[in-house]
Amino acid sequence: MKRLSSQHLRLVLLAAALLAYPLVFSGAFYRDIGVTFLLAAISASAWNIVGGYAGQVSVGHSMFFGLGAYTPLLFYTLFGWSPIAGIPVGIVFSVALAVVIGMPTFRLTGHYFSMATIAVAELIRIFVGTWDFVGAAIGLQGPAVARGWWDLTFRSELPYYYIFLAVLAVVLATTATIERRRFGFYLRAIKASERAARSLGVPVRQTKLKALALSAAFTSAAGSLYACKTGFIDPDSGFGILVSVQMVIVAALGGAGVLFGPLLGAAILIPLQTATNTWFGGGGSGLTYILYGGIIVLIARFEPGGLFELWHRIRPQRWRRAHAA
Amino acid sequence: MVFVQVITGGLLLGAIYALFSSGLTLIWGMMNFINFAHGEFVMLGMYVALLVVVWLAGGPAIFGIAAAVALAALGIVIYFSLVRHVIRGPMLAQILSTFGLALLLRYSAFWLFSSNFRSLPPNALSGTLSIGGVYLPVAQLVAGVAAIALTIALHLLLTQTTVGSKLLAVAEDRTAAMLMGIRPDRMQALAWGLSAGAAGIAGALMATAYPWSPSVGETFGLIAFVVVALGGFGSVLGSLYAGLIIGLIQAVSAYWLGAIYKDIVVYGLFVALLWFRPQGLMGKA
Image 1 (tube, each protein chain N blue to C red):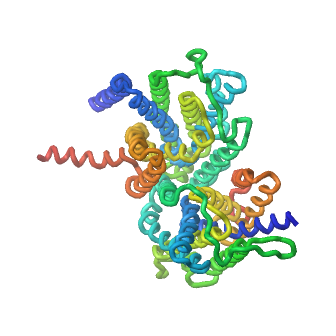
Image 2 (spheres, rainbow over the protein chains, first blue to last red; image 1 turned 30 degrees about the horizontal axis):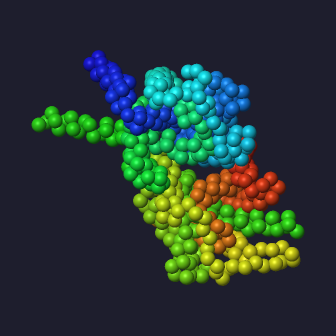
Image 3 (tube, each protein chain N blue to C red; image 1 turned 180 degrees about the vertical axis):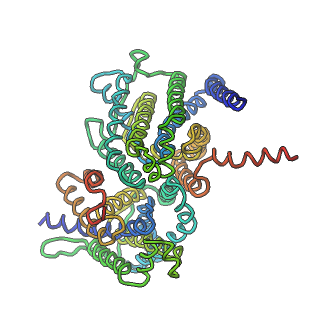
């Protein structure tokens, strides 16, 4: 009982800190970091459902992000729909795409899934870049001036911050629920050993497909939020491989398959990314990705469980030492 | 005549695809491991060729061998420092290790060499041949023929020599191979050397005939996936046929539909393959 309450206390503290952050750090620079952090945490948490819990490593999640980003802006451009109406359509598209990719690749081993996701994301990126209907290489614009709150176009960062925070809460609450349900146990069983899971009667393909669809839906929502906030989208910022890379590294650094792993990863990487961009100017983005690549290699080589696992390994030793003294 | 030229050009490029893809398929077949950085190895081979030409004024034979040796060494280093440790780890670590390596190599190349397109300075292979009205750059012809010869050589190495039998023995059953006195670690390191070396020399061959920038690694990596998926995982001969087919499809679709659609057609083919024939043309189910 005591353990439970301390967990609750930590959760309340985390929520309070996140709620208070933009009020304490009210400068535009800090609020922008906050919003970027939340967006990274949302997409990485969405990736985490299929990549972390189910162990199906997608390196092409940008396809869902991009679909979510393009769909509301496309319907706005075509019919003047509010982005709020386009977001669910984007989610439907993303889930459909998830099924189309998952159906054939989940019959095969995990490598196929990774290869297929990277190829399909690249296919869509090139295709969108040549298709005039969706703006080709230039991309699409959102509403320049809001007709009302439902256009989700604000001058201040503050409304975005709280909308993103609410979405993050929904994603994390869903993941936490899954963790405790049979579905969550299925996912972890599949990750540990697909063959063993199947022999115990876990509906492997169906479970993986459901996880991918759920993950795609949330990733799509993250893409929509990104498009609403920046007001425009082009093939690289929607479907580019670096969008997928960021989701993977944020989740893997914190801890893939851990509820708060992506949050920790984003809290480290987003300030780091902002810092390298500020220090090294325009050339900084290239350096950021060298750094990202290096971090990914180091995680894979030394700590595939991410920082959360490292923390859990170190902590009991410290505790024991403190009590021995 | 134009169409004959398109087909010949496609097959010659496809031969180079076959060469570097055979490296990817070798690792996949031996270790059940996908190297996401394979396209980056090809890209590095191109820059090694460039540096050898610019700094040492080396001819085609020298920069070709230099690229092969440099990349083979890199492959062996990567095997011992990274791959050996993640191969028995979780799937996440296996995929992230070479995926992260790909990013590291790609953006380091951007940083070192800038994103400008480069091509080799004029060398012994510059110039054009005319064979019965079909105009072919000498470099393209030499590169294509050399790539086919090297791919066949790799196939023969695997199927006809003792070293090849040892490699295949480790692929089949690591423990049994060990009991026969084969050291699996050495064989797998050798496979990584061969694989990366093939990518390196393919890059050097390609550099003689086509301009490039650091971003080509991503494209070649994906093309290698498609070739391997078409040819069947682990089959060098399969990737020779598949490489030629992919080169041909690219050339024809670029000719009919426009250059920007050639990659769309190839990646679309990959998705279709996954749906309808996931084991590849020559692969077993």
